[in-house]
Amino acid sequence: MQRTLYNELVKWKNSPQRKPMILEGARQVGKTYLAKELGQNEYANMAYVNFYNNPAVAQLFRDFDMSRILLELSAYSGETITPGQTLIFLDEVQEVDNGIASLKYFCENIPEYHVIAAGSLLGVMNKEGESYPVGKVNTLRLFPMTFEEFLLALGKTELLKCLEQPSSWVSPTIHESMITLLRHYYFVGGMPEVVNAFVQRNDANEVRSLQKEILMAYDRDFAKHAKSETQKIRMVWNSIPAQLAKENKKFIFGAVRKGGRAATFDNALEWLREAALVHKVKRNHNPTLPLSFYADMDSFKLFIHDVGLLGALSNANPFQMLSSDNVFVEFKGAFTENFILQQMLANGIENAYYYSKDNSTMEIDFLIDGIDRAIPIEAKAEENVQSKSLRTFVTEEYPEKKFHAIRFSMRPYINQGWMENIPLWAVGAWTRSLQIHKSQPVVT
Image (tube, rainbow, N blue to C red; front, side):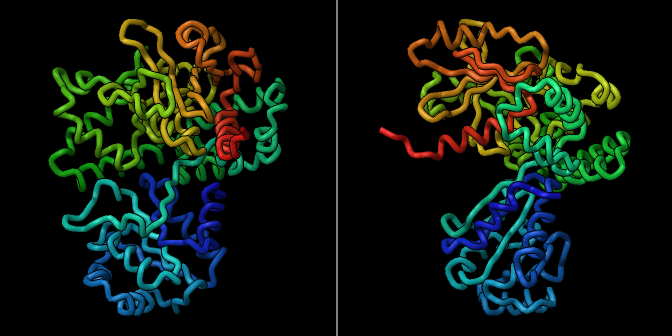
């Protein structure tokens, strides 16, 4: 399956400033597949080693004699390793002592060799006494497949072209087709194995079964790697659907366990975040750039990295998700907010926040950094798209900032001056267009 990040890896391969690449991401988002595709398509050969449960290579980095390491990599993989022609792929590198640390010496001592290291739990498996090679590596994060990648896997190339043409966002015919496919994406999500099964066999029961297997694999990771925090991690993880089902989606530790406090569950939550399984959206109390300066560290929402897995974790009925538009409003729009955040992050938004006031019920679902001001975003999962809070925020609370708001909803595109309504299925396309505008030089 084609992944957008592939093009970034090709740029890395051809860059004169190339350093060893760390390919990050949650387990089973397709890191191994993507790196192998690069090796097979862009290199003469590939020296591949998987360190997971592999005692044969457990001592590969017993020291940093790079001549010895290259010799043993060649012997193990059965491949001649040639600078610039061979991709050295170190998979599940977090499982071996000094695996990450070795990248510093690949960079400093033999920079002519092309190296990719992939791992699923890099953030939570720092080896004692092992330092991260700051400044000596390039890093890319792979997210679950986006809606656009989902459409590509389905062969919907003509609809993909429409996504990139805002003039098509107003077409009722295209809109209806996209809403049906979006409903499918809410159910299937973006985990590559699940998407592939859906594309090949169109079996809803198999989709849900595979999603449950992935969730069980995550649970085994909790037990294997989190040690004393395992039960707390499970409690936080399993509480997320109910937390998102609330009208106010702010994460409440007391909802994890009666009397629960941040001091009890902070480490567990951070483990999930560093494993790339959850996204933490902090509250902002002053919509001024940069938004990170005004983030409230104690108030946040917590979303799952894949909307399909959210449905499986919630035990949402597959038939209802596939056959009814209620999927867009179930859990008070939780699926829709999770979907929007997932698409924005995968398409280049580094951080998203939400806005609320202490003395008001007004809340803005997302705030992101724009070119010269923040962009307030509202998620609407229903046909009723009244935007009272958004209008109040733009026209009454902060009229001097001249915000241009965005509403993602079930309706086709419309520009109302102070606010643009973008159809839900165009979140990714809108985000990419924003990133292009932000990268252009400012004319003064």
